[in-house]
Image (spheres, rainbow, N blue to C red):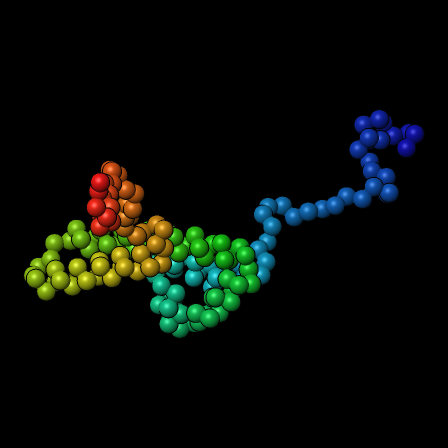
Length: 154
């Protein structure tokens, strides 16, 4: 090393120094999130579809399998909740579309009303904190109370 120029002496590494090589880019997904069907079910739910509809399609996992994925993987469970929230918003937008489309007759109007009511009831049941109608239980005003004891006054 004495004969080597200073620039080369600084760049060469001694055998005792070990270099850890790491892959470039994002780390690979492991477990359930590595399964393409898991990502597909999340996309399906985010678009407003139901888990039961997804499971009925040939080649897709059953409902119990998806629930098992939620129990086993925290990341999938978190993303599942996010997908459900997005799906609820998609369902609300679908209600708006149903309401904005003019019916051709009374039967179609009744059918659309049923579709919107059913979707809104589902939204209220799935997430009452977000979709239920707000009822104000606060009292404003005074209370007057008269007590009748039946005892004569003097």
